[in-house]
Length: 424
Image 1: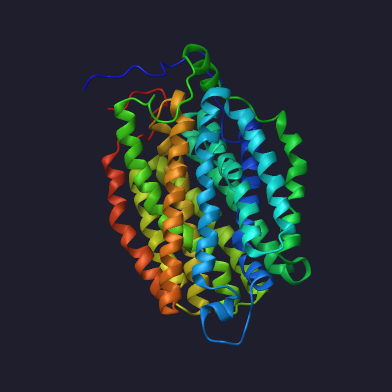
Image 2: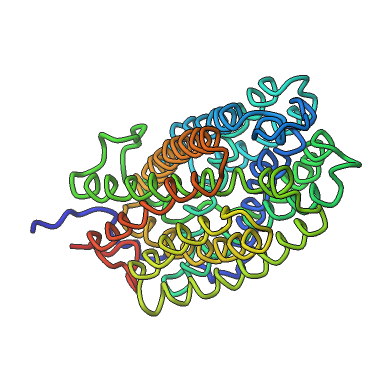
């Protein structure tokens, strides 16, 4: 096969370990993204109660305040709004990772705060959807920047840090809501997004532009890359990766989005137990990140990602079987599986593409994930609404995805390779 000369190794790259201040600052950016984005999931039960109508009936709509179809469509709209992150993320291939990352954090948080004043469910969905593309771009660019700035042996660790930061942000807003839902309500939870907004100026001088981008920007003409600038070799890899992003998000979209309304309004799990479940999942998730980055560096990206996808599908199904114990066990183990997956797939994806189009490729990965999450939300919500059983919806939505995990083995293994290496 003819080799393609892309991104020759520069002579003096400044690369960091995963504990470098610049990488840690990116972890804080990921925390901000998680805190801002996950509020809609954590507070969904309160939103449905406040802006819907609770009755003593036996249907899902009676118990939750809004029907499964309405909730599924609303969450799908929020997820679908993340499609706007594709052009925003691609701008980082032209103007740099740092400046676009800072802009997305500020705009995304301001719009999230604005959702606190929502007078109706659909107004809430519309405002939150406007901020979603910016916060989605934040986590995507944090991963790209961390991958580009880290040395090969620390890349999976750096990606694990970013994933952990996002998870910590999401877990923080979930715990706050679980413990103070009656006092703050969903409006107070979203108003708290002003706190991470205050920390953005602190990050401004600590987030660095990667040398890989700086050198690439000087050596190459800078068209606005979305698709056409990718060589055929990389298009094939991207098509496989976006197919995987679709099927993974087809599970995680509904599994994560319905879990709290299921716990609060269907299983009637107490707020303290829900908070303990989230804290426990956070601890197990941290362990999963450590195991995932160790597996990714020792046994390879492909087997680790395969194990992660299979685990997410199986344990997410268990969480919705219908009893409080299975909810707790299934949720915690699904978080472990997702955490196992995160460092490996993050490193794997960034290592498969050259610097000149890496942010654009990430944008397409996110784009496909959004479509997958939206599809999963609609399918899951409709099945749940038709059958009045979350367990049936989980089985038919989650388990078939296991068959697609083998797609990882159609890609070259990138373990222990530098980003500038040409991969056959």
